[in-house]
Image (cartoon, rainbow, N blue to C red; front, side, top):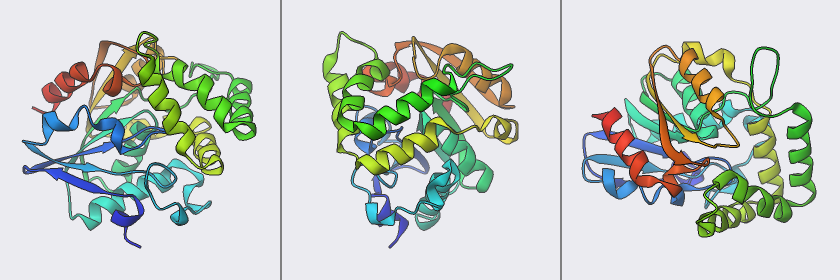
Length: 263
């Protein structure tokens, strides 16, 4: 099985430069549909699904390989290798922000720039660092997810999306959560929410854009500022957008910030 088959890769658009859009937990490549048309005329676009998400090949799941985010980062590198792409502009939402950083550390020639939308290197509070959650909170979320995937999805989707005035967006996110295999959803959630990549950030020298939303319950303002402070070559933008998924709820603002950064 090739990485292109495994990760349901689609290549669109034209241009000398390539943007790779990487979705967040519980999502798939379709979540980027509002951004792709604005870049496909000038860039080659690479879309994909992580193993266990979207239309990826779930038979490729390997518990050892995907026991940390580095396994998912390796998938990114293998996709770019098969497509013979280097110096790619990587745009990652949520957990994909750290996956992109790890991919850069694994193979710096493949990743030219990083854009991190709602990044968090560690979700759990500890001495000197506010991740936004106590460990007991995270363990409780994971236990609920493992015991009742559907109920967890219905509860968490509106909180994650925010923007209660547009319930259709929360419904789309909830449906995406529910489409995941319950076991793989629980596994990816555990790897995501228990990860700690703070020590990796100072080594990520790629030019990086950190896009922070208002009222983000998953990755708050202090987390975004922490990421910016730790990355040696980063820009920080506090957007007007609210919630954790601005590429869905406020795509025009994300497009503008991304265009400014890439140009």
